[in-house]
Length: 296
Image (tube, rainbow, N blue to C red; front, side):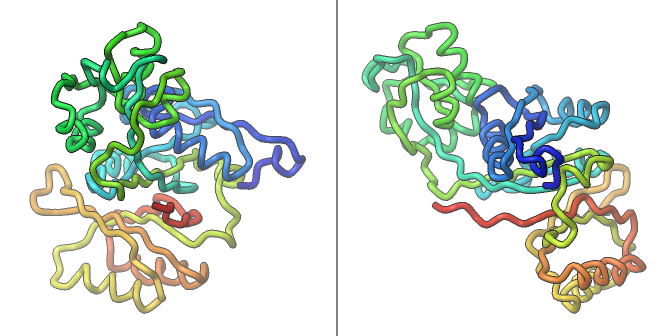
């Protein structure tokens, strides 16, 4: 990032929109990403992704972080569509391992827990551990971190939350069990968004860019997609992701979202120009720096 504050040697602060409450995985991922760039974060919470994108639309100074895919649940298709409709651009990515803990009020033991609260997805991901504790009543909650917050603030004795360790620490809860998720290889990829007018400040230096997210549609021609992929391969583009979504109102027609990584920015620009005549509704969603896969 090319912020003035960094150049002057002081630590910059960024306002970042997150979906969820303080302590959620979006919050944790935002803090990790910006800390890796020597920056601190003030998060702005939104209940839903549409509300988050609406806020970005009216506040050019506000950045955003959104989950785009998970190694277990797959792609978040609704977020692909929100991203397509937004003017904001992807300026970075972050990959985070999703690990769950069981936490409760200080002094609580596992034997004291009568009810477990968390988001349905987190409960599903910890199903095996919960089956080993049949005396615990499982109750769905709107948010992982939200369940931890309410147990802390409302002093809910006998209740435990399943959430990330950051949420447990933030709300002063004791961690009763670590790593209770069934699948230990659970990772989520997040995208960092910024207003187009602030790309120079919030995006990577042009020569550091080695990844791009693109969106396009194709004409109903035989071999249309394979022709595009062949051109990308010719220019040494590594196709790291391809996702299709149906186009509402145009039966059996699809939008394609692709991620490409590359070593040569000039070859990337040549590839983009080469495929333009073959595709429709082309949009560059973002050009940024790829991050390494997190450790197990």
